Length: 357
Ligand code: NAD
Ligand code: ZN
Image 1 (spheres, rainbow, N blue to C red):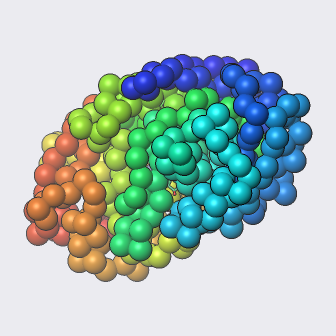
Image 2: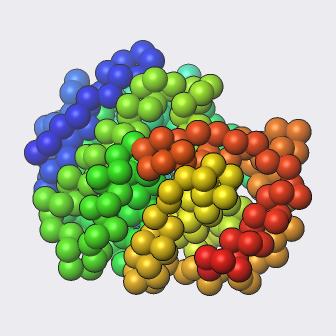
């Protein structure tokens, strides 16, 4: 088992990564909790819920299962889960366990953050993408008008990552999670970037390699979050690839592409803009070829209307007064921010489509 510590504003928490950890969640937890609520989704429940439940030898353990998918990060499920907390008699000394991917993590974390003004919760991530979402303490639900519109900063007390659970992920979810690892490499570790894009995700990722990639991704994210938990400065860099990525995700319709698939296209665009505007030497062809080899849906951009995408980018939480703020790279490992007016962004997007895609 490997571990890493993360300093949040008011506590230090540990991330443990290992094989088969789900069988020992109960004994790995620090502190004792008389009452536990495990929150998971309908796809993860039949695979891992019983193992996690059985790992607790003391305390009363209740479970709540939400429908799998992004649509569960909503007011209705949030309210249902608060009702489950009340009906199961959870109090300030209780623990919420978020067992699943980023959807369960964000939603269960927000429930824990707000129930009785905040109770402890741990993250038990089961997707590769959740190496990103389970650390850093951002928890949220979506509003009809936009993603993650209702939320807060609330860090878990522990993250217990059983990489054995990743074996049941469909390939497109592996691809999705790896886009965020590639992003982390671009931000702060060119070696990680180069290592990932030199591998085939199907055959060249043995367990030790996967643990190493996840740990490096988490280390990069946590180093940034430790400097700027509330996103006043450097944490904005974590949005590399997300300005266009989020626009693609919502314009295509949630569920058509995974989050990471959309971010992968956004990363290519960020590299292209970095080359055009900053003269940066960017491995655009190398990244494009690797994404294409792994079936990332690069064609998705062609079917989307550029002006709709720009309008969505202007509505992004990171944009203000109609000016789009994008994270660019001076070189691999050196992010920077740049502002764009919509006409310039529109031209860049059109040229990107012609020259790269
Ligand atoms: P997800 O939680 O929807 O999981 C993807 C799919 O895989 C779901 O259908 C799920 O049921 C299934 N699944 C999960 N684990 C499985 C397993 N081990 N085996 C088989 N199937 C499994 O999505 P995700 O990609 O993990 O996370 C995306 C969410 O994370 C988005 O809502 C995004 O906004 C959020 N996010 C949050 C942060 C943050 O800092 N809080 C960062 C990045 C992303
Ligand atoms: Zn992301």
